[in-house]
Length: 343
Image 1 (tube, one colour):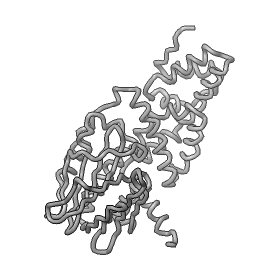
Image 2: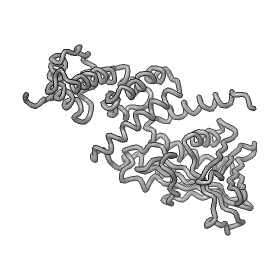
Image 3: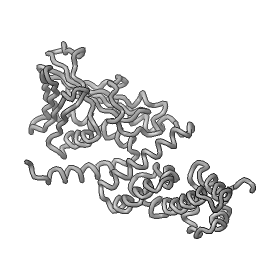
Image 4: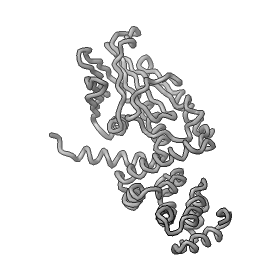
């Protein structure tokens, strides 16, 4: 058999019909033709070469699943909820029955605005797209100029005089990869731009929020150091990397949607913890470790702006969603938490 060549929609339709599959709509064919990579051509070639064998059956199943993934419901829907950049991951959705089933089950609720389904769909597509980025060096591009300008604007901010300080380019402490968010393939060469740290100083201690997004993912570290005035003991700091459950909670507190975020059992000895709580006139930060005491700092609401702005920006880049989708999901989560009776 000659090599499969698909350069026009009519050729793709001919191959699909020759394999005994139902002819997809013109819109689905256009969406399939628009996908990057060589996955469809290779799958059709495999189906032809191994007719009647298990490999061919698997290839036909892949093509059937892909026609749904490329349907207007999927492609147009992803665009409407701000996930247009995830469309290139659709070929990988059909790679396994389990992945396709997860995609199909959360797609319609996500399009109806169910925040949990949107988050699940976003995570699934981001994970798949990371695989595409690793295989395609041409996808590893630096941030577009608009994104670089946005990041530079964030880096130019300053907190309350004498209270806080934004340090662009300062390296965060690297933590366990299990606590990181997926990194956007767009980060690439611009990863140095996407590192920020923000210090808050108090009478008896200081705290540092260290945020970074690079090829290893999104990390947020909270560090606390005892001391006074300008002589804080950062060499003996307590360092905690926030996990995936704590990150949206932190953003909720910074934006005033939640009153408190707490973390416990951090570190190799599971002996570290933190609390950030809205106390009406300020946020109260407590960073602690067993046998090492507690670092407490008051943070002004004006300081919340800088940290929340950077965190929102990095989350949107990491999850490849719009700010609207991010905030909609965040508000839904906060509403559910606030509606839960306190024990």
